[in-house]
Length: 442
Image (cartoon, rainbow, N blue to C red; front, top):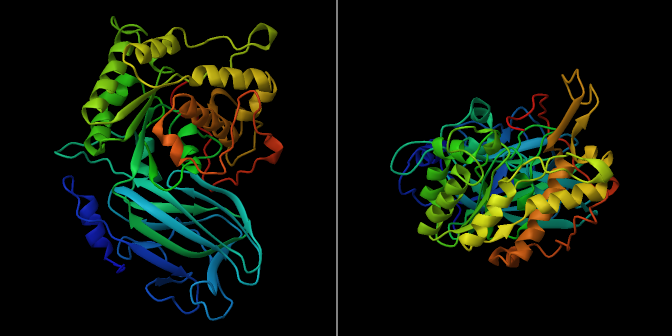
């Protein structure tokens, strides 16, 4: 296949077009100071991202180049860093198959990869000297523009999110990353899993906050892209009024999925028609019917439980009838259901009252830069908690017999919330950005 390297101005012009995107470009990058492989574009450590260049190392992060020599031009050199670094490429909105090659002819490497706003792709993967690892994921890139006019009403905090900018960004967090090559190809026929939800679902940009939606990409083979349109503080009503459902529907294809999880913020709405069996139920049915009109497959997800322990180590329901209303709509409308409320309740009760603090944002003062006071949040997850909840979602997909399960990676083992992963054996290298401000919603 011929490789096209197009000017950033052309790519950004495509991204600005709201209707009928032209064919997206293909990229093949060879990293390091050695000889570039045939058909690949060389990326030196000095390549800094700019709109004019259209690709490069981003957000002030730096790497070093290593050339081991040898006959294989692609694998003889690489870039590396003992600190997290970002590499970005300007691309139009859409789904892309992203293939990364990692390794070092003469040394070991340790690699960990996230995409965009801290979406988990690759958990810690080590290579021995002379060993190389190649992995592919399908990644969604979105913008706020809506076909046929209009745009998503973003919150101020979203204006700087990597999920909403004009490029595809990969974040490399390994203790000793060895990035050899990167290929990006359009994947227009990939199945898209759209996520509609709140702060328990959204891609959280900043440590130590996290949500299950940003962990979900790790579990899928190429062919499925997760498009996370959730945002902190949203209810069904505000998701609609900010034109997020319009955006999802404008790019949804037949066979795509729409996962819908709300409730935490809906229960605080006190209008005359608000309530689990009134406006909430009506809006759930609207989301379902609109997705079906596009040939999409709606999936209802009950709200994650809060950390609200009562007597006897049991979780007390803090969400009223909202989870029950979701179950009722799923039955009435014949919609697949993931009962995440029940799954997370089981997870928390298994872990216990005190130990569950380790899956939520509970940290003593001065754990993160600028954090002068302790953090004690019983709604929002840290990365470990978000990962465990994502595993619950994956098991819920299996129970609901969704066609998506055939795209699960072969290393995704069966999971039960009564047997969570041991925290001591789980690894998450922190991203460079952190924030002490609690996300909207509770």
